[in-house]
Length: 377
Image: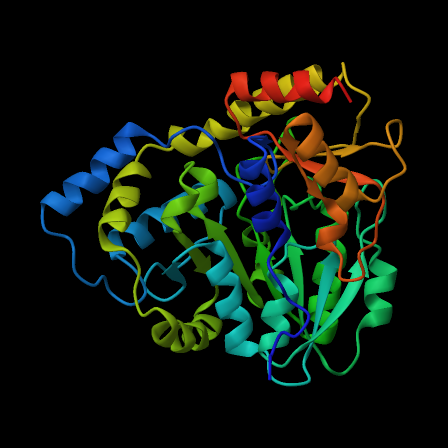
């Protein structure tokens, strides 16, 4: 009997396969079409040549954990112990699953905001928890904190937040942090913060990492992805940061899921992190792509929604069609050769606001070719 009877192939796989079948430009799945740094690849290759090809320590290479701790203190003024509070993981999605597996027991309730990254709900269900789903307001995708308070029960164990947000590109603001801090203190909630797009924040906005706020962090798991930061999603490298008392339980699960993570890539990333410009320059790099894509899309009948972060841009298509978003996304892939993700796929009940998600982490010529096709719709 299936633990996930309602789960099939993800919409990302479906749309990428449809894009390949129709030789379409794939702006659906969230990965760049440009390569990662030659310097980073050289560091990894050097580690392999030097014989760093056996198991790394279970929590991760200390050199890498120390580099992350330095980065966190510099960016967020938060001291974390690389020995006891950072664990290297095979990707951000794994980091999220492990936190849920370590702390969610049958019957525990977990608050999840929709539209939600597609792994959240299955992660809770497969561990016996109950997802409590709260929609973000449309079209600005903000949190209604009064509704959150009303949904908290004696069984509420965890609240999941994602900033910058996938798929919407919204970000948490100061008032969101203040409200979250009140609820954590009042109800002793755990927080699982997905911050894989931490450096992709635009227009001079601040990334309100949970790491900045000690009163929340003491109850939190904060998860990150090297793949999203350094353009190498296929490497599946990430990490989780949590206070020592939470990380102890986290590592109990981690050691029996994967035990340890790719050793030469840990050496490579540790060396690469020694140059902060590699990540500090990312907001300007990706904002240029967002702005250029918006300029190109101005010549189409799509209407952009605000994207303050991530490498996703939501577009309304109400001036084009009244089709459901899944039908629309599949049709433009087949007929016009550009693949997008229907945002209804990020809702458990398929809520359809007639919005699709495009990924702008692409070469300039890819964005130009896609926009030229979309202008024909």
